[in-house]
Image (cartoon, rainbow, N blue to C red; front, side):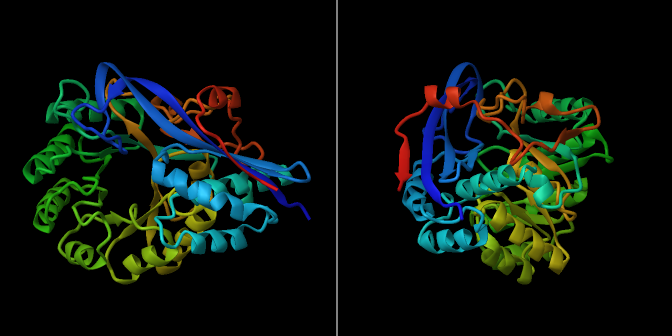
Length: 394
């Protein structure tokens, strides 16, 4: 029986030209602004799991990169040592319990690496292991937030122009992340303007990312989504997407399907939202929700209860998972904007992309079919940009 003998965590930093934080003094997902003269340092984590019989698995995060997550990963890594790497269910339960006092963001990368290891051990793709039936995924454009500085999405007109551009490029839909001020009237006006510009036969979505100030603001903007026939309305206001009761009240007053769950972790908490009538769809992310193992559990409970779900963000693990899910709709190409490069790390030596140029003429992206997650990482790039590497070993 193979055992895990070594776990490596490689934090690395790379520069993204053309972006900065603008007036923001802290980086978060979506805080970036277009800045022609700027250069944004971005940190991500690469994980390697090595076994005594030569098996190995790898995963590099797309969006996870905070200091708190790194702390959790360093805490959890020693618990993997000596375990059978194919016993993902047992490892999932052990790591979930160990991280019970935290937000679980340090868990997902290890599980993704274990799925990569298992696929390589059997010589098949993770998509095939999951029973994947899709080889191509319809894809929507997911914007950066709006900005007040000139450039990027700095006005309603800029959103309108960029929506038209994305439709012409072949994207299957367009999700608006509005401005950080959470001005309900501005957000509603923007939603209506974009709909008027692109017509009624293209999917539009709105994600205020919990920036609307009050429940009444969320209701007001949701009514604009109803008027504009939006496909979904997501995590609207400042409860941070965690109050099932308030979202149930909101859902009861709107026609637009309500999508929540990005900010609560795991099957138990997301099932509570479903059972309490607090949403119409659930967001799931294998980086956030304790890996493919955790995300698959959430997908199955949604299916059993008759709910759809959406995968948050992008990556090879996301594509493999979506390939096997019948109750989901579109792949999220996040985050993009006019003259705004994606912050996905440039660590692929196999041609894999999560940039707009990855979109094919049919508005889809392919599911990697090679062994494991089906991608090859550029470890020379990672090593050249790495900081303090953590190694747990026995």
